Length: 402
Image 1 (cartoon, rainbow, N blue to C red):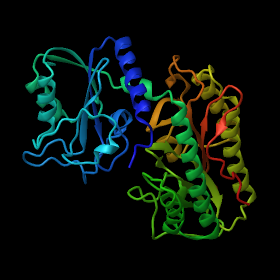
Image 2 (image 1 turned 45 degrees about the horizontal axis):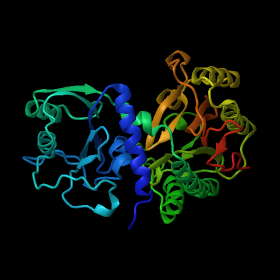
Image 3 (image 1 turned 90 degrees about the horizontal axis):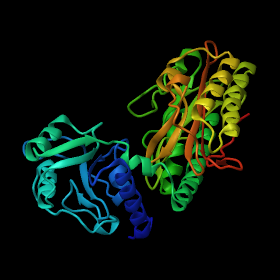
Image 4 (image 1 turned 90 degrees about the vertical axis):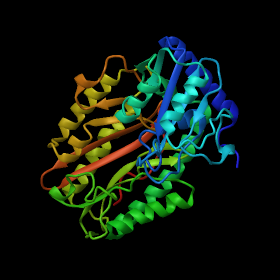
């Protein structure tokens, strides 16, 4: 089966990363990613090669080391060299033809051997993956390559990934259609009633049958303090033992690498039975209003800090109180790509760096959580593409379900 993106898309990515290496003063970069059932740290190697490990976990045992981790050696102007954790995988699904082949069980040592084979044994080397690479692996690299000065550079590939190509934007549009259909089914189930598992299953079924994927299917329900946490069951995102009752608030999300690894995470709040009380209606409408006003104000060139300040003021005007969900996600939005990307729109205005401005073609989630002690916590998230003439809504699921 052919790659979703043509090879020329990957070649353009390699050139852009090579330019970024030159701008940051690096001739060589070693990029690490971690997959094997996770999505938070798989992005950089996947972006450059489409490699993802289907190992069942990330455990090290005896001589078997580096399970779930892959590395990429980048030299400016050259084809990336992949050192995978799997010895066999669909080669036609990997963009580079420069692949290290070996039965060596210690894949970390294999990375060092690949560096030596290319004569990369001394000098400065940018290390992408410093934020999650196990210390044990780092010690092996240091012991095997004592002449190398490892320079942490975790943003190097992400700086390129943040700016989407036209093909990536079309991919996001396809993913938005899938996420919209799945979340609509999920919300219909929430209004109809059943267990939290029934609600999650309705969305998951629609997502999977369209070729989509998820990280978690978050569902929380009840009233008041029942809704403080993001989910009632963190391991799965839903609790099969909890049945929603008429009049319950249900806050639910589609959450994950919905299409081709690209992250979409729309969420809504509804009332089971579709007959909200006046207070429930006001709080759901207030959250919807905050998010949609922010989307109206976001434009290329505008300061992220300015939007954070506006969002904070809009939230305060609702009379919201602090709750665990808002403390878990103390933000108003974030970049979307292969998982979340910078910049984040932090609720704490001072936490937003001056350097960040929105740009044309930026892909984002815009969100808020509001809470009233009697009603509970409501939330909304929309996914958008930023445009000068008006932002493009990727997840046009109905906001009101009554």
